[in-house]
Amino acid sequence: MIEKLANHFQMAFTTEFTLQDTNNYWFQTEDGQIFGILKTALSEVELGLLRSLFLLIEDTETNSKKSIVDLKWQQFLFGHSNDLPFSEDVESIRFFYFRLKQPIIDPINFEEAIKGAFQQPIVLWINNMYGIIIEEKPQSILDKEEFIQLSDTLTSDFLVVIYSFIGQLHKADLLLKEKFSLEKQCFQELLFYVEQEKTVLFYEAFPMLLVTSAHSIDQKILSNHLIESLQDGEMLHTLKVFLQYNLNASLAAKRLHIHRNSLQYRLDKLINKTGIDCREFSNAAFLALVIPLMTKRID
Image 1: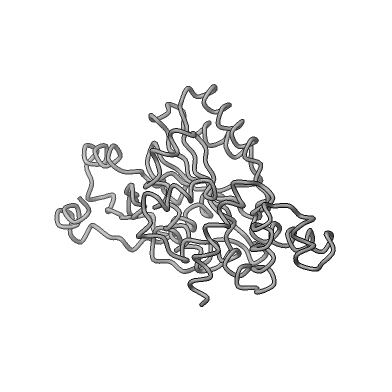
Image 2: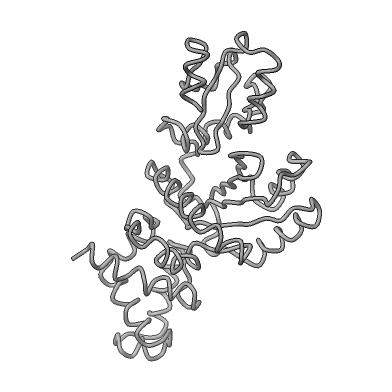
């Protein structure tokens, strides 16, 4: 479709998106690709047709400062920009991926309701049924039940069923673009599984991912916070023993020849850095699957 549009509009077509360009109408495909067509080259009928097929990015002349931040995120995640869209004091990012069972009538108020539940989140729409919530400076431990309550409230208020995939706690750096792309692909591959659960964490979905797409599983899909933690020999050994003793802190501490409080300190360090509470069964199961993958790479 993009190639056909490029051939049809020729010099009036571009994929070189810039925030200051107000001469073009900018559209976004379902895959996140942004393209522009000169306003003077489009008839009202053509504009209406394109708006029905793609997400229209509103004119930057009327955008607020917040919208400019949204556009920077779009360029970073879907475009060719390597300009970091977040401030220097942001250390971690978490992505929430959501898909609606059907389009909603009032997307503006829907987005405002989402923003009211987070601390200044970024909400990006891929199309009228699929979007992403970007949380800067997230809490290490995510309250899944709180997010489920938000989904239930949105379902009740806007009469729409919401399927959500909650990503990992990622380092805020240039590699974030790749991590986002891999997580987004996971959501698409596991959509059926997510539909059954309505809301699922990456750590919970990982075993299903191993079953459905084992050939594509690689260390790259993991948060760099987690990779760095598991590359610490002491932390890796601690986790192996903790898992071996069925999450029993007293027995694990005894086997490690350390005080129970020292073990708790190490586990808290992991939790604060990665958001993974290995004392919870689903997170511990995730680590039990990931550690062999990491150990293989390290060896």
